[in-house]
Image (cartoon, rainbow, N blue to C red; front, side, top):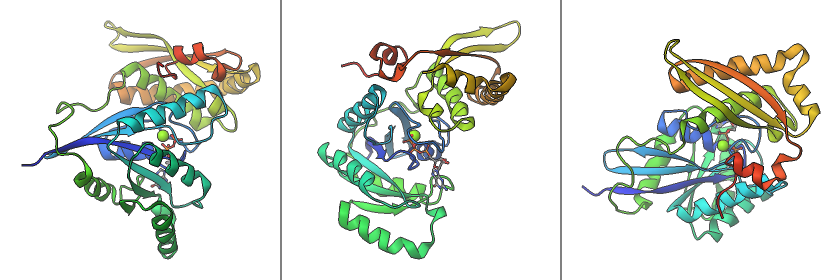
Length: 298
Ligand SMILES: Nc1nc2c(ncn2[C@@H]2O[C@H](COP(=O)(O)OP(=O)(O)OP(=O)(O)O)[C@@H](O)[C@H]2O)c(=O)[nH]1
Ligand SMILES: [Mg+2]
């Protein structure tokens, strides 16, 4: 039996549905999702297994023009990850007009010397009659290996997208162990799951100005409880006030939702404490980005 194994990078504009796809393809939540742009900040490996094929999916930050040092690091992560990939799924949101953002993403994929399959996502939001001109335009502008209309949210055509890609992967022994799922440390996932709830409850500049770090992650045998203390970083005192909310109402909502989400992740009883700290302009501070694991080594 021929075995195929390779790396597929998930690239495309922010908010196109890359992280929703990786969770759906793996049947496990390994990446956080939100309706705010630029949710994913790091490279997230998710390993997909079949009897005769194994794929390392790399969920990546959305391709955008950087405004802060953090965003430059995100784009470095995208470019470096593309160097590791055999193929790209170029995620395009079918429910918004396809323009310069998709072209910019396409150019970055081409510059990395890669071919792509267009994952034309969110077709559940689009009238089928409007799809034909869009398919023609994408074909003409990007000359992809294939275009697969799909919905990461409903799952429609997700398997078809994967099956379309497998023949383009190298014949190779499997790259990962049979039970590999992701390479993310549990603590990193925990802080991401907390950040997801902050993104869910906040708007405007707050989602972009927030980072999470873990102060304590301790198992209490007597209580059979995982104790987690996390720190939320913001850039200004006014953002701290918003996160705390009137009488602490906002931070309470975030804490309760994040605690439930951590319980699902860790499959244990969790007690979560949250603190909010201000670090002026942290998104432009290299040392802070390093401490938060938001910067690749040189
Ligand atoms: N209706 C619909 N919504 C979707 C679909 N896929 C993703 N979404 C929604 O689109 C939003 C963005 O999804 P993400 O998976 O976070 O997008 P992303 O490409 O990872 O975004 P970044 O990490 O910011 O680059 C979320 O609100 C998702 O629920 C889909 O197929 N249909
Ligand atoms: Mg994402």
